[in-house]
Each structure stands twice: as C-alpha cells, then as structure tokens.
Length: 170
Image (cartoon, rainbow, N blue to C red; front, side, top):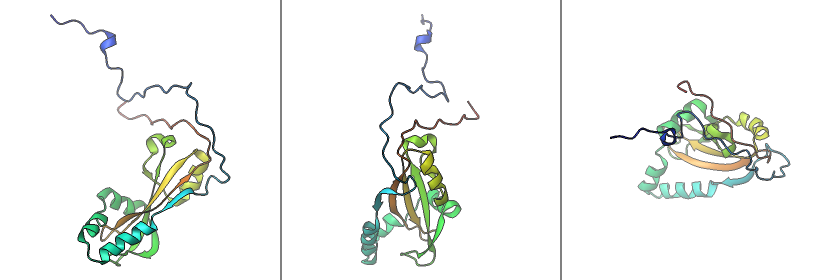
C-alpha cells in the first residue's frame, strides 16, 4: 500500500521561482574607484595573439584550426552587434576585423554574458559595482577569433544581483 505524500515531500523549487536570498548577508566593502568608466585590471592579450599568428605563419595547421573556428553564435554576434575596426584580418586579409564586447559579472544577474556596444559601457559602469568586459576580434570570412583584451569597470559599490525578469510561462 502506497503512503500518501505529505507537503514536506514536495519539491521545494517551483518552476520560475528563485530561492530567497538571505538579506542578512552583508555585501562586501566598497572599493574606492576614482572613475567608474575608466578600465582597471586591464589584461592585454596582444603577445599571445602575436605568438599564435607566428605559429600559423610557420605552417602549424593545428594553430590555424584552433583559432579559425569561430562559433556560429560568435559569428552572428559579430555580424549583428560587432563594431568594425580599421584593421584587416591577419589570416585572410579579405575583411576588416570586428570587435564583439561581452560583459560578465555577478551583479548583472541574468544579463551576465551579453553582448554590449562600447557606448553602453560607461552608463553601465555607473549602475553596477563591478563587472568584467571581454573584447573579442572576429573575422566573418575566415572565422579568425581571438580575445583581444579584458578589463573591469564599475563604481566599486557592491550591489545585489539583478533579478530575472518574469517568464511568459511563469
């Protein structure tokens, strides 16, 4: 004979519901930032890029396969949201490179990992405490893609993560 299920046996997670965040957990101390829109903790990947290009020029087919294999989503982001540069592609020299800018951060909540235009970044820097920006260069014709640089923006004042907007199915 089956025993009836009690409410204590039900799943505690309801679809679309977020677990309550403890409000008593203090946020980290604020960081002293002079200009939130000025990049800090900049990591330039120019030396790595030069080393990869040198390996490709020497005839390393594996290096070419590894760096000319842009994901279809990256190519789509480059076509629709990328910002054109004046530099030609170092591999095919047919097209100009396009920069695609991604933002990541705990404070961004569900908006972390999205493509943003360079003009949006200064506005975001004053709205969020800290988030990391990644700039990827992409060639639409040959698939060349390489991380150009990454840096941190934000005003240094920690905030709770943004909430997920309600879903149509919820």
